[in-house]
Amino acid sequence: MFKQRGLLIVLSGPSGVGKGTVRKELFASPDTNYEYSISMTTRQPREGEVDGVDYFFRTREVFEALIEEGKLLEHAEYVGNYYGTPLDYVNETLDSGRDVFLEIEVVGAAQVREKMPDGLFIFLAPPSLSHLEQRLVGRGTEVLEVIASRVAKARDELEMMDLYDYVVENDEVTKACDRINAIVMAEHCRRERVEERYLAMLEGE
Ligand SMILES: Nc1nc2c(ncn2[C@@H]2O[C@H](COP(=O)(O)OP(=O)(O)O)[C@@H](O)[C@H]2O)c(=O)[nH]1
Ligand SMILES: Nc1ncnc2c1ncn2[C@@H]1O[C@H](COP(=O)(O)OP(=O)(O)O)[C@@H](O)[C@H]1O
Image 1 (tube, protein in one colour):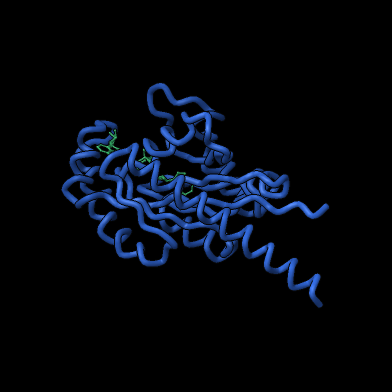
Image 2 (cartoon, rainbow, N blue to C red):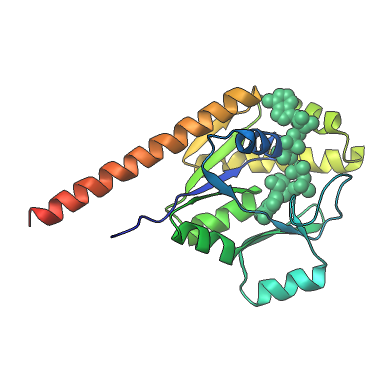
């Protein structure tokens, strides 16, 4: 029996918009049926972060070797560190029919769009740039200089929003999660309808 490949869901948007918060809220729900792809990074773990849970924390040497070997679906350098998505996990999970969820920045998302254009690309947008700055300051994980560089970068990142299938405003976390779940559900329905039509057409031949 033909088994449909899982759906690749890509959540992106500027740093500080709330991608991590929204992703954790989505995965805290027992109804969430997608698998989270743990990224690899060369940045230092923050307090409480665990290797293999939050990220795979690796050296630049190891990371660069994996790029050379083609083991990453995408990668980007972000504020001085590498971030990337291990390719095998994504392919194996999609092949098994399960959906995969990536939470990545916009340069990497554009690479995924090139390589896997049938993914579902969702841009998480802040209500405003000042909301974004407040959130970064409120999180307190970066010094003010780094926050300023992230906000400056966010201006360029916001311009990429029209490359996405959907833009979801993160005004409130639960509302943003509801919107994302609705989009994923609608996309599944669309694919099922397309497949049904396709099979019906083949039978009618
Ligand atoms: N391209 C790419 N970006 C990633 C990946 N994993 C995380 N990111 C993004 O890298 C940026 C920095 O992440 P991080 O240092 O954890 O900071 P935070 O997301 O602002 O808490 C964020 O925009 C993440 O979404 C990945 O595998 N690939
Ligand atoms: N809808 C929201 N309203 C208010 N604060 C939020 C919202 N979503 C996230 N935050 C806060 O904004 C900060 C940045 O969120 P985070 O998830 O780390 O962003 P990102 O992963 O996009 O860099 C955190 O302190 C988080 O608690």
